[in-house]
Length: 137
Image (cartoon, rainbow, N blue to C red; front, top):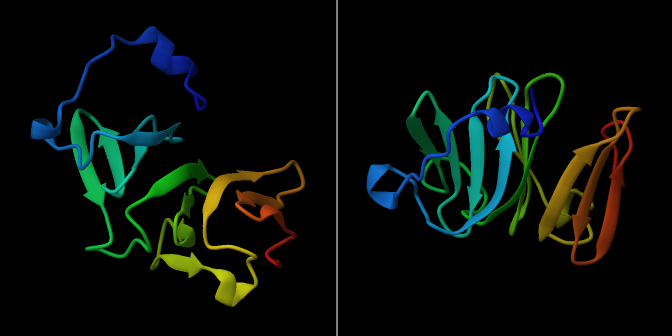
């Protein structure tokens, strides 16, 4: 169950930095389709918590920024990140794709990322709302 409903039925555990979190400041939390938790941090990149293990993905690997402001997983399983340096798509297969003002965005500071019923992507930035209609900005 996405959206956190299944989280309410589980026991709560605190995971300290010493056990693997890349940063204590968590900006966003998203439950993935497989039940894993995705944690966007302020300066530590993206943390995935699955089966009591933490996998960290940061600028050292390929993220455009270690400041992850929002997380969204689409129906195909791709992970979308709103960051302080644009929008990042982590596809199920293949390499990370990075979108910025060079691709037509009005700002590189991306906050929320969501898809609507028609499959269009919406993001919010410091300059307003961006509607990405069927893959076009």
